[in-house]
Image (cartoon, rainbow, N blue to C red; front, side):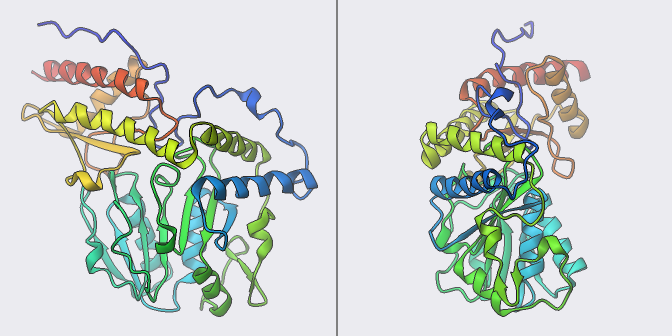
Length: 381
């Protein structure tokens, strides 16, 4: 039987896991109100930055006593700021189940040289949170962008913990529910769930994290872009839009436009519903086929944004080459861009199902994956 080309094509073939698809209907003219050529310290710049912070709080339901700051160097910068400024006061426990979490382990153990307890899990699995000592400071990712595995909830994080919880939530924030009472530091970047531009991070601090900053001074020197205190007190301006270094007001405008779109689709719940519907479409597709499966072993921990898939057909001779060939074929047809698995992850596909992706585009893509799979099976026969 001939392997027929699917009739429909995704209207938007962008399924990259970062930078991710722009909001539906995005046009550069939407950014016309950006105060280009103006100081970010001018009234107009401060107003834009403050609005970005306030709207972030509104949509994510961040408690009023948590600080929100816009910081340099994307999510990476935000996580590094937190670790270099807060860790060292008490023992540390590092949790990793994918590439980025492993990177934080390297920074803490090899750069900060802390004698941290490290717990890891293979791709597709997650660390047992029931075994974690939360009287230590604990660092973890909420959603494994490169492994397609997420923390399903914060139930196993105690409310009366002694240590701080530092959570890299960059592919979770806006698309997944975050239990603020269980998290002391939350970081993310604009280029994930809201499809914003790169280079800026968001750092959210609980009152407990602020107390640590004001009562503890690390043993190591801190570069300027990491410093959040002066004279033993929090630099409050950082959390009111007075950024540590110069932000791109074009990127800020883009974030503001994305936030307004988020409000138009129902805010936090609407964003979650969109991602959930996208992921469910992929899961249903995999459940009805015996040659492809979710990399996540436990459905309860399967990511709804960075959905990672593996090919399971016994006829495949070289898994890595096969997966790359499928991704290349899909890109050549113009139906899916940037959906190969992350370089450190098991061979397969990674489909971004975040909130800016339309479910109709996911549904149009899936028959093309089957078509490309059959083409490659035939080619290697």
